[in-house]
Length: 322
Image (cartoon, rainbow, N blue to C red; front, side, top):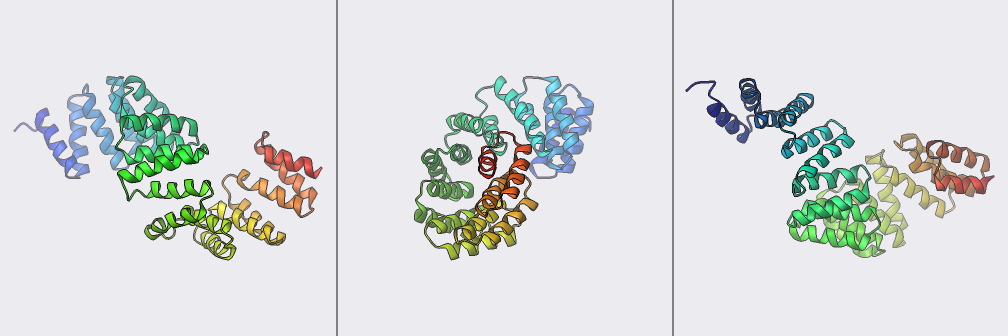
C-alpha cells in the first residue's frame, strides 16, 4: 500500500482518532494536509486533534485554514468558536458561532453553544433567545433546557426557569446543573422548605459544592434557622475563600444581630479578595452608614462610582451620607 495514498491515510487517521490515539491521528492528518492542502475537511480534523491535545494556537491556525478554503463550512466556524473559548476569547467565540448560524440557521449545536457561552458572559437576554432556538431544534437535549432555565433564572423569570429545569430533569434525571438550578428557582419563589429538600440529592453528589451550600444556607436563613445557616456559610469561606456571597450573607446575619463590627470585618475581607469590588462596595457603604461612619461611607461610595458611575446603590448611600 502506498504510504501517501490519501484514502488509506484518511482511513488510518480516523481509526486512530476513534481509538483515542491522538498523537498518531495528528501525525496522519498533518501529512494529509501537506499532501492535499486544498482539503478543508482534513484541516478541520487536524484542528480538532490539536485542540484535544492542548495545542490551541495551532488548532486555531488549522481551523482558519479550513474556513479560508470554504467560508460556508459551518462545522469549522463552530470548531473555531470552541477553540476560542478554550483560549479565553469568549467574545470572538460568540462571533464565530454566530457566523455558523448565519450560514445555517438550523445548526442546533451552534445554538446550544451560543446559549451556554452567552450565560457565562452575562448576556442573559441573548442566552434566553439562543437557548429557545436550541430547545426548538434539540427538544430532547437536557443541556438545552438547562441553558434556557439558567437564562430565565438570571432574568428573574423564576417560574419559567423552574419549568425548564424540570423538563431537563425529565430527560436526564441525574443532570446536576438542572437539579441545582431547580432548587434555586424554587427558592427564588420563596418555597424555601421545598428548595432545601431539592438540595439534598444535589449535596449528596457534591457535598462541598459552594453554590449548592449557599442556596441551602439561604433557605435556612429564611426558615429562621440562623445558626445552621451561619455554620454553612462559615464552611464555604473556609473551603472556598473566593466565594464572595458567603461573606456577604454572613455579614448580613451579624448585622441583623446588631454585631456591626463583625459584619464590617467580613465585608472588608470580602473586598480584599473580590475579583469585582462592586460585589461588596454597596454592602460596605450600607454598613458604614448604619454604623454612623459617614466619612467612610462616602469614601466607599466614591470608590464604587469610580468603577461604575451609574451604580445606583453607591449613589443612594452617598446621598444619605452627605
